[in-house]
Length: 499
Image (cartoon, rainbow, N blue to C red; front, side):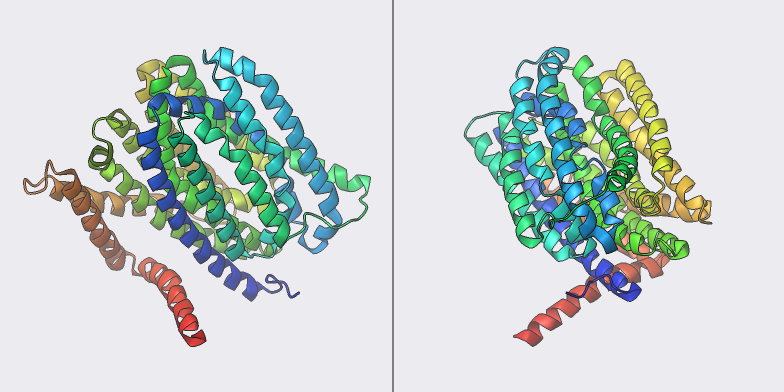
């Protein structure tokens, strides 16, 4: 079989095609997640959201052990991957089993720590899925190495749809917070089976001790980085679990899930596309840097309007859908929707460090970020409870991820103004567009009508933001139009020709 990554030109075409597939998947997933969130918000109580949020502070940190960093190391051994697969597979399975046992052992202590006995069962239910998901790690890496993003997009969409559907069904059956926990294992089994059907986890073969030392050495550094990231991701819930009621944690958890969707979907998928291409260019640092700059610029101009529009629609949108039930979550949705997009570009620059095997440098950044985050969140929580935590989280993402992105890129000759553009120019355009939309929504003809306010804000934003791009950044406007419009047009023409 001819590899899709056999030549640089093939890499570019595969990356562009992969980006389109994963963006389409992101938009579909965003819609699915949005409607699922709406249904679950009607079926479950804030206390249920709070319980699963606290349980995830344990399981998400432990689940960072699933790949043990082996996926990134293995992806860099593409030409000899078959020689590394058996060892990588069994190491993933072994470490994930240790993680599962560790979660089960910690569950009673977490329940005592948060004064919530129900957490024991929730943590155990999620822990069981850890080794089941780890069984598909090597297969997923092999598919990423082939840059078959069409398959991955389909697999990811299936996983999200199934997870959300099962969660809704269980919530409707009245199982409470377990509606979030039980589907993890079911989906893990289905996902692994689908990945194995597409790519066997490994071929039989022997491995040498030096391979184990190599995987353990580099994987350990990646593991340390990922563990720090997970402690940061769960840090706000850890603090809130100590200072706030389960109901208030539930409002915050609902708001964070709502606010983080566009960032996780767009940034996660773009980094998944970019990383294999960066690995191919590891002997061409100039091309790596150029690819990262182009990806960061494109992602910045996409993620900022999505997130800021979400902030603008939060109050009328949630009130339209739920009345007063979830209105206490609105301020957190607004604050987090403004702060979280500043984290998106660091996913791309972080991929550059991994592609260059600068694992120690990545660890150093995370070792600085971890105490910084907890200090900021701790001060915020002490100062103003849940609101203080939300403000501290937004402030952290507004400052530290852009700083690390600049530090990573400056070594490659990228100027401060170039990095600043990724963040602040799309933010400026988004603020103007959404500000005008919110201003028009306050006209007496629309004000007080939630549906009308949402329509006006959305319509004005969708007109003004592209117009600002076309006038002040025509090159970026053309790139977005050509990247999506041109690619979709070609696929439509090919489909018509086939008919």
